[in-house]
Every structure is written in C-alpha cells, then in structure tokens.
Length: 389
Image (cartoon, rainbow, N blue to C red; front, top):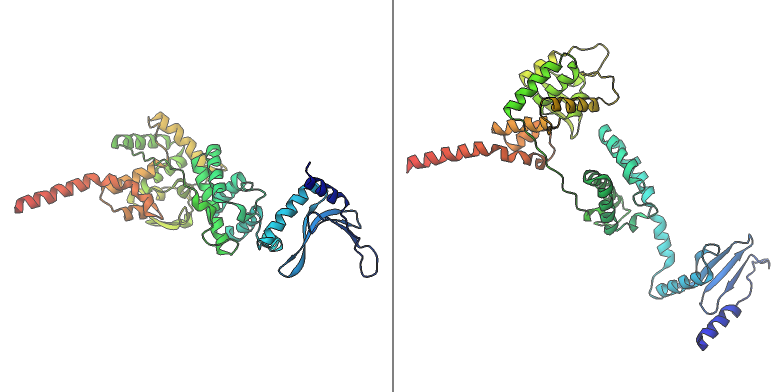
C-alpha cells in the first residue's frame, strides 16, 4: 500500500462532518460527508433509511443528486459513481437535467400501450386482430426494461434476427413493421428526434415469391372434382369456385355478406387493402344467384365452424391430394386468375385493380406472363417493317 492509499483510507474512515439541524434545532436528517470524494455523503433519514448523495455546485446553484439507496449498492460502488458524476459535471453535463429528461421519455412498455390505445381504433377490424396477435406473441416483452430512446439500431437488428430464428422470416418481418410504424409515431408525437427510428436499419427477410399456375388440364380436372363434391359439401365447393372465378382472397369470399352483393359487383367493406369493388363475370354472377338465401342470416355462406376459413383450407388440402395437385395452394387460384388476365394482355395496373393490390410491386410478379403476347407484337411489327423495306 502506497502512502497515498494509506492517507486515502485513513481519510475515508476519519473525515466526517457535523450533523445538520432544521430551523428549530432538531436533527432533521444526518448527512455524513466524505473528505476524500468531495461532495459525496451518506444521508440517514429519521426513518432509518440511508442513501448515498452527491452535493455540487452546478450552473451557479448548489444541487443534490441522489445516487442510490445504501441497501442496494455498497459505499465503494457509490463512491465510484460519484467520481464519474463529478467528472461529467466538470465537463459541463448536468445529471439533474439528464434525470429530468429520462422522466419525460416513456419506457418501451408504456409507449407500446399508449400507441395501441391511440392508433388501434383507426385500424380495420382484421388489421387490429392480426396486430394484436403479434403484440401478444412477440412485442410485449421485446425490449422489456428499456426506455424508448435507449433502443438502438443494433438492438432492433439483433431482435429481428432472433425472432427470424424463433418464429420464421414472415413473422419477424410483420412484427418489425409494426414496431417501425410505432417508432415513426414516437417521432411524430415528439417523444424521439427525427430520423431516429431504430427499425429503419432492419432489413426485411426476403419472402418466397411462390406463384403456382394451373395448366388447362389441371383446371379442367379441378372443375370436374368440384362438381362431384358439391353434392356433399355444396357451400365449400361454391366458395372454391368463386375464388377461382373472381381472384378474391379467401377471407373476402368466406366472410362475404349479402349486403355486399350488388348485381354484377361485390362491394367489399373490409378487404386487406380496405373497401374495394370486385366485378363479376357471368359465371360468377350465376353462381351467386344460385345460392339460397337463408332468412335472418347476413352471410352468403353461413358456416357453424368458429373459423370457417380454416375449414375451407382443410377441405382444399384433402381435395388437392385426391386430384393430384399436391403443390397447389388455395391462394394459387388467385394467381391463376391473374395469369389469365395477363395472357389476355391486360396491363399490370388493371391486373392490380382486379386483385385489389394497393401497390404495383405486388402485381409485378405477373409481368413475365405477357411475354408471349409481346413476342407476337414484335413479330407483327417486324413483318410490317419488312414489308415496307
């Protein structure tokens, strides 16, 4: 032990100052200051509670910063914290202002709750249901114990990677988009500075762009099978036929209401991209007209099951095995509908409108299907040029 260390230890043990008294001369609280670490002290309250404090002059005023309860950390640790605070104060930083700022920033859990209460009433019912599922499954404890401004881009990237491994790439992408939107609102509402959204650094997992199209022979086989199963499962068979004839999403047909049927049009109130109109061909019109309407039932396809969409999906899985379409999903009927439109030289914006896409990117996958038409056009143009020359 050096002479300096010896003096420091002795100073720590012997350097104590007088008690403090209130204006009536009674001891209000007893603060024992240390002479080795200036301003550091142990304050004992009348209740017996002991806390470590640091008193310093900050911005021309005498300030007291409470470090911690004596039961939580040792005096040696508290002194180390005090030394760091002194250094920061000497560099012009104000711990009191930092503490005040922290009180104004909500925790992740608090802001998630506030965001949900404020934003979810404006979501579509289907969106609110899906988002709430992801919240309960993945979001509630994502950054537990952190304040909103403590979540860094590295934290968001790490969380997204962990969720990808645990729940899959699609779930991780969806959960990240929810939090990206939440942090955008935090910026808009003034809780975070602009361009500080940590989820802007997260790269989406690449999705599998699966587009399975039925050949004419497969389509004929499916049509024949649906006619046969209509005897035992008329409702489900009709739903599958309408999916093939309209290009609608499963939920849009399964949950279709009579109030949404208007002659040659379906005026869907709540599709994936919001309200939209679906035009019906003659076959689809005739199919809907053949459905008996049950008195007092608002749904076109009344089904007793709690999740009729799943029932239809299970029926399709069995049917496709029987007719040799093992790799065809029910959603592929929607792709198939779009492929016929593309082969008839419909433009991508028109195909997107038929399918109810909100962005042209979703329709882009069908661009290559019009290659045959393009080649025919090129040949016609070539023939014209050749005849002129």
